[in-house]
Amino acid sequence: MTGQVSPQQLAERALGHSRADGAVVLVEEDSTANLRWANNTLTTNGVAADRRVTVISTVAGTTGTAAAAVTQAGIDEDTLESLVRASEQAARDAGPAPDARALVGPAEAGAAQGARWEEAAASTDIEVFAGLAPALGEAFEAARSTGQLLFGFAEHTVVSTYLASSTGLRLRHDQPTGKLELNAKSPDFVRSAWGGVATRDFTDVDVVALAGDLSRRLEWQKRRIELPAGRYETVLPATAVADLMIYLYWTASARDAADGRTVFSSAGTASRTKAGQRVGGSGVRLWSDPSAAGIECAPFITTASSSSSSSVFDNGLPLGSTDWIRDGVLEHLLTTRQSAEETGLAMTGPVDNLLLEAGGSGGVEDVTRSTQDGLLLTCLWYIREVDPQSLLLTGLTRDGVYRVEGGEVTGVVNNFRFNESPVDILSRISAAGATENTLPREWNDYFTRTSMPALRIADFNMSSVSKAN
Image (cartoon, rainbow, N blue to C red; front, side, top):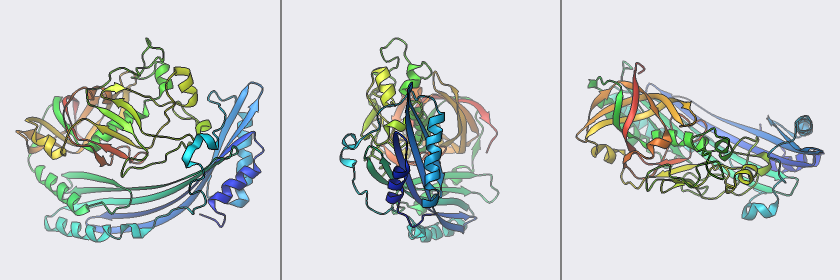
């Protein structure tokens, strides 16, 4: 729980306790409100608050600088010094860090340095659902009138992050994250439809319209069609596109590519990556931007661990709009200062949002209407990697796959297992909708800030029939 000591004071006192050669302190104050419902009735709601403190210590040695981070929740002033000592001991026990660089200072942080540092942490409470609760009542009543059942939950979290370092960095960011997931089911639970919405504050969530769309999908499911495995012209809604593109983004490490381990590896280039090569169709743009409307995120790096695409030594470096793929050409990969130097690529740290544009307009309904013979998915599920060299993924369809004939949905078909690479499908887009903010289904516990179009993909590989409902 949040104690009497402010997050700024906690960060300053942690630095005061430090005996390491360098230190970075991350204080995260978070509050969460949630609302759940089942069988057309609200069931539970609650609020919670927590504080997490991460201390990163760096220790210089004769063979290089070591670093270690220790994170603890619920910490207060009495337990702070022990956390700092644990971080220092972990750094002394670690070997030299290959990603070691000088800690970032105020000059490198730019305009973010010191901005709003003294302000109290932002928070949320159950009032964030003030407009949602009565709308849910309206949706429940409509569901009862048609003999359908609604299940789901809404969650709103606000995290205020304070970053302070022994080099003088003082950065802060407030991050609101909201999501709503809704399932509509027939009374016998044989038919099921899913929808989800990402939001910053729930003022833009129309749950009545969402429930109405799911009710329509349940009606489509009254006619069942069995189809064999095969390659089908397939319409992917924005949520399914998001799940595939997030996986692509997570595997876009320059260091992994240079080591020959990913779909972005290329032994014949100076960087040993495909940077500068075509990987998708003309007009395809995949990018991140901390200031993108509705999916804003931290404009500087905050990380409690080092990996192939992030470094604790890079904490505080500014983040800006970055094209990962532009007009089908791979422009950037995720780099740390270390991997940027080793590959000769630009320093482009991880941004907590992702956008895709493919030159289309309209929504998934428009893409469906232009489909003469194909399938319409609801969402993808249980996505796993099969082959990192091609980024071949497998997974299941869920909550409705529909037959489309002459631009009309004519019934629901069986579920499938799919095998596809998100890189390959960027070259097989036969139609696209407009880019819109969407909630990924599979990865929304980790990544919610996405803006994607619906896509129609030629020859989407439904590799086998799934018995799952």
